[in-house]
Image (cartoon, rainbow, N blue to C red; front, top):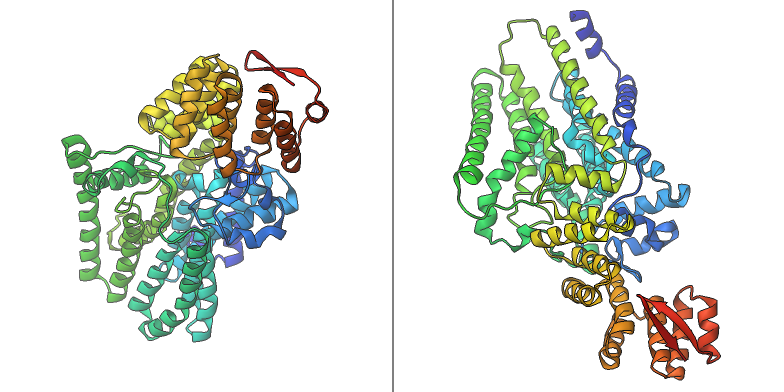
Length: 575
């Protein structure tokens, strides 16, 4: 056993890197063929600028979503969009390529964490802890969900910056650190935590370079803030979760359950979901006090371990423990809903803190008096790695389709209104409109939004309840002016509304989306049906500028030929 421990300690970095690549591929292979899902539709598949890397300047000037005419949204992730575009340009719309790149970055990040750990811990401990980071199911969403490319990029560039900071004491090396920190920020605003962690490292281990670091790091911070301010603003945010409607006091009362969630999922990662939306705005025993007790026990163990290390170990060990403890706490504080976010919790949000927590555990274990030789711990650790790796591999099967993932998410997170939206969409595609409407309504009851009201409208429309569908679409537009909703509502109004109401609708809709060819087609049909051929011709000509209009429809309108269109169960005569 001791010989095995010695061999692990003697491993070269390239050997460790190969081991990480093999283990990472073996664990996460189950997810490499999974399709595009959820946000991938608007950020990749139906996002024309992303389809060519030549458009990369646009990625730094706007959000990540395609609304039918332009990049929009409040999330500023230009590095993620650039990565999507580069992969799409090279490999096309093949999700395998996206998964492979994402897994490669994830494995590389775990290896860089190993190099960071090795500066403070013995090589064997650094290896085993970083392998835990690699295979832990709580991190698996980072690999399986293409939309979390932002997280793997932000961590990769951030941990690379920290490693470079530790590797060299030269001031000129800070420019490489600064460049990596800028790329981390451009991947996700959470990159600021790596700047703080870097400062903490210098404070405890290399105070002489703090001023130089602050001076050099000011450059990426200024560049990032300037780019973000121009693109989406500094404080812009889309409301997307029940917790957005809760007061600060209510969010603080929810905070103990948030911390408890991460503690319990880290120690027992069984029921996992993409998103969680619970809120506990009132003080209760089960939702406030009990989670707070769990949190205080965890905090007490950390403090106790710190005091033990300070009393029985060199000062350097206490500094290392404090460094990783601060790393862990910093990542948690960021997501305590002091500022409301787009979910209550998300497993990917603990990704940064998992690394700090494992480092803290590695230092704390030095204070434990073992009754067996350290080498004998290899067996239970390897067993634990296998168990966690198998759990992560099985998690990949949940992502086989958006519908399967949504079913698993609702089972693990009953308040997941977004998963109910996915289920409703699947049921619509299957022609089960009654059940689709029920899921859309369940989603609305949890958190009303444009997407669930739109699906409710589609379900009712397909069921023949056109007044109900129009009402649902109009309500959807109160939450967001999506072009899809305007198109859905426009078609109904053409057939089932009075001319004055329909005219006002198209005037408004086309002022918002002047390049939406479907709206122009519907307007042409409407004008033709009410006997205004000149207006119909003008509308259909505009439609031809912006999309693929059926040639027969275009020819009939332009030549004043009367014809009948069966729309929504009604025959509409266009003259």
